[in-house]
Image 1 (cartoon, rainbow, N blue to C red):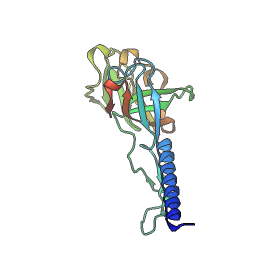
Image 2: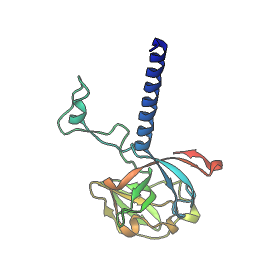
Image 3: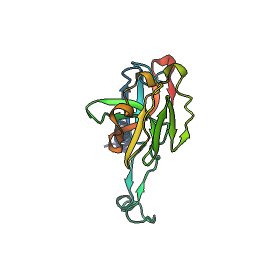
Image 4: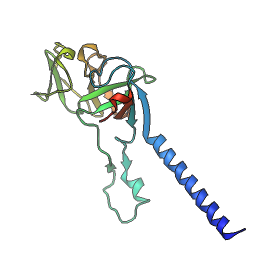
Length: 196
């Protein structure tokens, strides 16, 4: 075989293998989701399509990772979160706790250990009134709830359209393992493309 042909075929195989690897990484880390309903208006509307970053809240057991990364030290039982943890204000897609076959999109309001209360529609976290510029006056509710503590490993979620959202107020907190990922970008409709 001609040496030039050998080099060509080797380059072609390496390129195809690398492209296949990139496709697998993208498929594992990103997911499309179509918004159903008006619970996240005005940010997201019924029928909007978004890309969810599934890797954003990934956790890596440091002991297992260190087997492949020489020269790095870590305490036993340490969990690495290279892209961060769920934060207050994140817009997330999650498996509905009452029916995991359904996915919902909401905003994280309360973190594990937080004391959450609504008073006439205003959110208080640990006794501090929250500034919520993403909730417009016409989407604000007027309800009052009892203060509750969010258990470890759970999140309190609300829709931005409080008058039309089925959320933690009615069915409780979302377990961390139900989080699919953070909404990364809206790509449809094309005149409303926006990253988050």
